[in-house]
Image 1 (tube, rainbow, N blue to C red):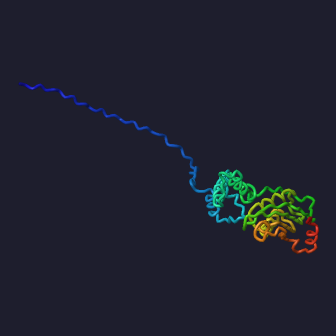
Image 2 (spheres, rainbow, N blue to C red):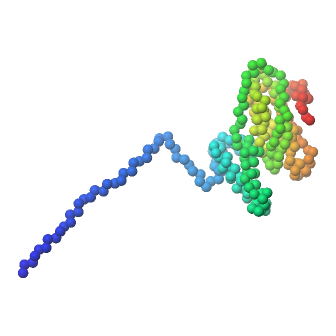
Image 3 (cartoon, helix red, strand yellow):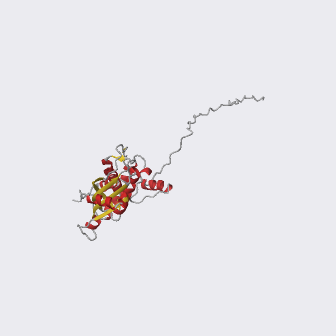
Length: 263
């Protein structure tokens, strides 16, 4: 018996072309530089690394504003507040139930960064200079200027007054009287010692004004002596810096010192 041939269907697979989804490549700008993220690194460490990379100094009385980017001061306040909270806890102060010390860490951090030590973190105030049209070369005394600072040994307040004497030359630049106060405040709002502070102020005035002579006298109460230690509330420190004509001319120096209002 003849066997029927059953035709077998051969499925001819059509070659299916897969169309790849082509994603257009992002255009890259030649000058674009990838941002380096410092995730998890404390902001103070990031700033410190910038300073060290430039081999710059960052002592307590140094200004480091050029290493701080816009908006970073708020982050620095938050970091200081966190560490100040740890200090309070180590002092065994219950900041949770004590209504007087709640948020004290934040207030202290803000005070340090934005007020009493802000001379470290903000740029030098702009000094408007005026030409010495009248060719003045007579003694000028500015003061007393109120001084608020802190000693770098114990971070205790230094409260006092400063007198500035300037003998301009006929070619010297003149600055507005308020600028003496602003520059003094900028220098003093840092942890430091009085002896170095007046020298730094004298250096800046010499550089900005280029006078024949500069003289500075500072009279201050140091709370590291009055509040702690020997606790002598009547002790003061008075020191002076004499430059140029004030150092060489005893009559000029005597005139300056005799005109100071020491009341």
